Length: 244
Image 1 (cartoon, helix red, strand yellow):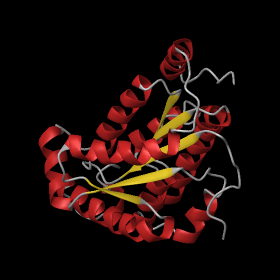
Image 2: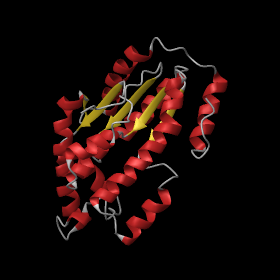
Image 3: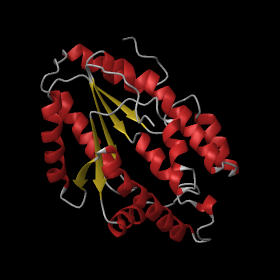
């Protein structure tokens, strides 16, 4: 079974993965700011952000009618739209794309929900292989403490309540995250994920990430300030197609 499409583009794609509370989004934001300061053309792409399925997803969650397979197909549709609009055009033009979660999120969460691993991997074969896939590894108890201390509310599907793991939402969340963590650990070797110790101080993690990224982007051309301004406009209007 093929794991990725065979595209070979001049740009670079860096993605972050990890369970909730791993700090991956914080690290991606810091990396984005640094790359912009270094004058690289940078675009951001976030999981479950496509306007194509946003309304459908919202309605399904509100009525609590999404099955594991339906959830998987909706996210695959969302991802396909992001690949076409937000990921391929910039890397085809020689820019950098940073993705907050990628196909590995589906592989972890969908399988944790009971979807067949081979089926969901086959579903995402059209994905572009990342230049580097960072996995922010953190013990479950630390991640849970971060989330539960900062969230006033945990949502139904976020907690895996649809799986019947527990009638208590916090207990269900813990059990669901534990299942997701197991799947991530399996993927480290399977997909060659680059592991970052997410228990380290934020600055130490960022230093390691930048060292790895710098080795991959140093041959890319830098873009003038107008390009960076344009990339910010695209981020603010994700319904506007890229003009590359």
